[in-house]
Image (cartoon, rainbow, N blue to C red; front, side):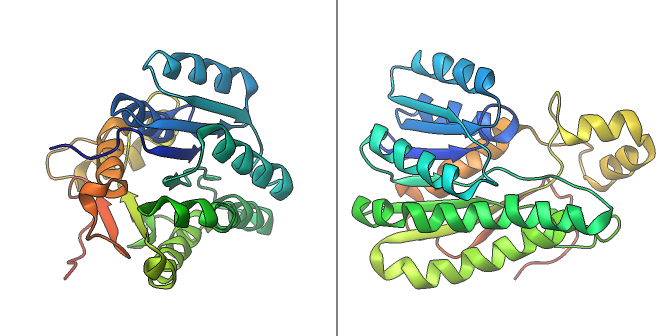
Length: 253
């Protein structure tokens, strides 16, 4: 199936490793021009160089998304470098954490505000696209109780609600909004590698919750995101797509 991504212009935040990197790799493979950011300049430069080998237009810059003005400036530069924006994937996350009000503030600024600011800044470009698409990276942690009360879970839940409401608001302007909620995803340097080494009982418990006993990969999530973001998914808007290999136990009607 042709996803219709060739020639599209996609901006992805937090895209030098893990799920974000897999997303930009797949978009470039499908012939889409891509812009990306992360905090480390050397990692951004390396990712840009490798992606250019796909024969597409690539732009990247180092930015801390907690700095609202710098982040919005990056988005405008990215849209300018690509000649517009058809797809926006806000992927940056502060990650998990169990302690302190400081954690909640950071998670709000990184997960929620970075997504909202990005959607607002890029909306004029997405409207001009005629087939604008936003895919928010959420989490199954937002769907069921998981571990102890923590900001990560609550912020991801807020993003799913925000995405649903935004979809209703901008649908008339030709922009689709969805979220994708990955279950446990394992990759070198990722959260679950850390859990495996430091909290083996939690890791073993998570594996036992998955019917076939296998965590997902960034590449598998990237394929879900690419479909949902693409014109091939033109009827999907306001949805939260769960990609968890059966990890969650809720029944979704």
